[in-house]
Length: 253
Image: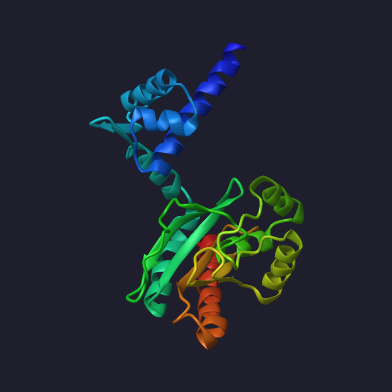
């Protein structure tokens, strides 16, 4: 194997180890090696290098993802115009609805939450800034997909598939594309318990005049509250208004 290939393989192994530590919520050497099917000696070398470089920590033999990644993520996020522009509107949506409000962007075919705010009645869910989600099973994601060229949508679906998250997840490509047609027609998307049971969500796109989609805004909450006119009229109108403010600010501020 050429030296360049060795380097690429080593880099990929380090990244797999970091992802495993996140997924396992911290683990020891043997657990990581068994989980990935990699020799303990190899895993040990990578773990030690990552510790030495400050990317993971070793807490009594339990390795965990370090805060160095937070520094890198914050650096990236703070250089995004959409983050600073969307943040006050997300906070306002949370205050007006009392629920959870979010903004997300597309990166490598997945949705990435860049900011969120909790209203007074917001329920605790698994979202946080930096969390990545599949696009087909979220209102944010369907909003983004609806604004992308069809060839890009197909590329994303070919890469990430349509895995079921709940019994309501759309797992058929033709059905999803019909849903995306509806999203384009009405200007916002729904998540009807498609990613998490008991949770509904509405999302609207941020598309500056003459440009492409840069983000999506959403409001989510429990099915016991997000229903009727609130689900079908009030929240969509609030989202479209907030998205319009963000679009104008992106162009003129």
